[in-house]
Length: 217
Image 1 (cartoon, rainbow, N blue to C red):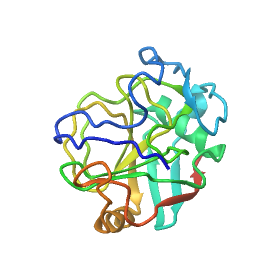
Image 2 (tube, rainbow, N blue to C red):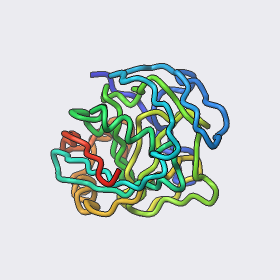
Image 3 (spheres, helix red, strand yellow):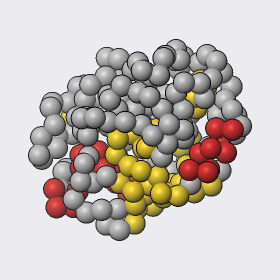
């Protein structure tokens, strides 16, 4: 399996997450209606969501049942409606099921990255959408945020912050872990294979997302 090579950057710099620059079509600036723009790659394609503002406003929790335990987060539907609507769309179409979290960082950046059905770090759902909720964004432990390849290139990849992390406010925060932070910390404690450099690689323990379920919608 091809493994994307990433450089571990200082915590204050951009985190190189998701597809290589140039493979995703940048979406337009965020709007009240949310625009999802066709983009490549289109792995495990489930279609392009059609934004429904009323449904997008409804609070929900997402539970990821993984091979290492369950992780639940509260979606920030009031702060990141485009992002949370997209995540719900993909989850309800079983997009994440049987995928695995392909990247763990344990030095300066403390994240577990998931959401790529190809497991390479370069996969995407066939569309992109704008950034949200970046004004004053911080990334304490328990944050769920979008991975990207630059401004307005969000797709399916996201990351959990398992320990307080300093990042530039470039990654849309769209959830807060309410249960399972101990699961993330257990995964982190097992370390990574340094495939992408010291403290950056595939988790040493396999983290397969078996199922994602949405509650409260």
